[in-house]
Image 1: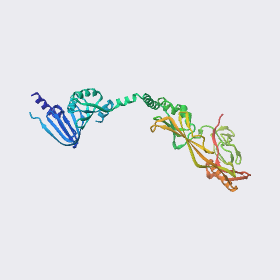
Image 2: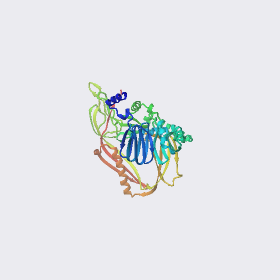
Image 3: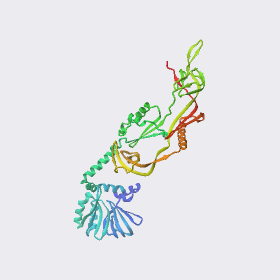
Length: 92
Length: 394
C-alpha cells in the first residue's frame, strides 16, 4: 500500500522509474555499446556471450569481442560487436 | 569519463589477470564489495584481464583465493608508480625542482630592455638614462615603478615628447617619441639683439626694429651682433627694443679631400667562420675553434637573447661571432678618375649640410696634383638668412 503511494508521488513528479525502483534500464548505442542500469550481477561472461542478472530477469547478450568496460554499483557497460540479446522474465 | 581516467591515473591502478574456473563468481563478489573494476576482457575460457584500484588489491587477492583463482599483476600504471620509479633518482628530481624554481623566480625579473623609437629616429644615451632612472636588467619587476621612471627620464632630458614603459613577461618595452629641438624663443616683450650664427659677408640688411650694427659688404663671424636691440633718438636717449630684421649673407661652405692614386680596397671573399659563445648576465664563455684560418677578416658579433616564450626572456644569451674573410686589392686611378671621384664625394657631403639648394650662388673647385694623389677643394657659395635672437642681459 505504502509502496503504491510512493510510486504515485514519483509518477506525479516525473522522476525516472529506474531511479526510485529496481527496474533495469537498458540502453543500446549503435550496435556495439550497451548500458544496463540497476543490474544484480554477472552470471556468465565469455568473449562471445554475457549473461547479466537483473531484478526483473536475465539479459543474455551474444556477439564478438565483448568487454565489460566499466562496472560500477548500479550500471555496467558492455562493449563489443553485439549480435543479439534476449530477456528471460522472472515469472512470479 | 576523462576526469575519471585522470583521477585513476593520479591514484594509480593495476591491470591484473585472473585465472580460474569461477571467474563470474569472482566478479560478482568484487561487485558486491563495491570495488571499482573496468576494462574487463576475457582472453580465453578461464582467463580475464581487468583494471583495479591499488587500494583494493589485497582484498581482491583474498577473494581470488576464495574463488580459487590466480591473480597476476600485468602492468602497474599511474602516478604513484612513476614517483616510486624516480625515488631512486634523487639528484634528477632535485634538479628538476631547481629548474622549475629558477624559472618561476626568474620570471619576476626584467631580463631584457627593448627600446622602440618612433619612426626609427635614434635617441642618444637613452639606455643609460633609463638604467639610471631605475629600469635595469636584473631588476625585480615589483620594484619597477613605471610612472616614476618616466618622470625621472623626462626631467633629465628635453628631447623626449612621449615615453611609455610596458612590462611583458621578463621583457620591458620602452617606447619613445622624439621631440624636435626648438630654437629658444625670446618673448616679444623682451629686449633682444640679433646675432649672427654663421660666418659670411652681408649682402642685405634690413632692420625693422633696432639699430643695424653692420653694413652691406661687411664680413661677420658667428657671434657678432648684427642688429642692436636699442634705438637712439635725439631727445629720447637710448631706448631698448625687441630687435627685428632680415639679414642676408653670403656663406661659404668648403671641404677638402685628398684622393690617392693607388688605394687598397677590401673585398669579401665569401668565406666565413662562425664561433659560438654563451653569455650569462656579464659572464661570458666562448667556444672557439682555435685560431682563425684567415689572414684578414672582419668580426661581426650577434647577440641573441634566449627566450622561452615570446616575451619570456632569460638572462642567457647566445653570441654568434662571424669572421668574414677579405682580401686587399690594389686599385689605381688615373688623374681624371681620382678627380671626378673626389668631387662627387665632396659634393654629396656638402649638399647634406646646405638646407636650401636653390640658394647656391657659386661653386668653386680647385685641384692640386701631387705625386701620390690629388687634393680637391670644393667651395659652395650660398645666400642665407643669418641671425638669431639673443636676449640682452643687463
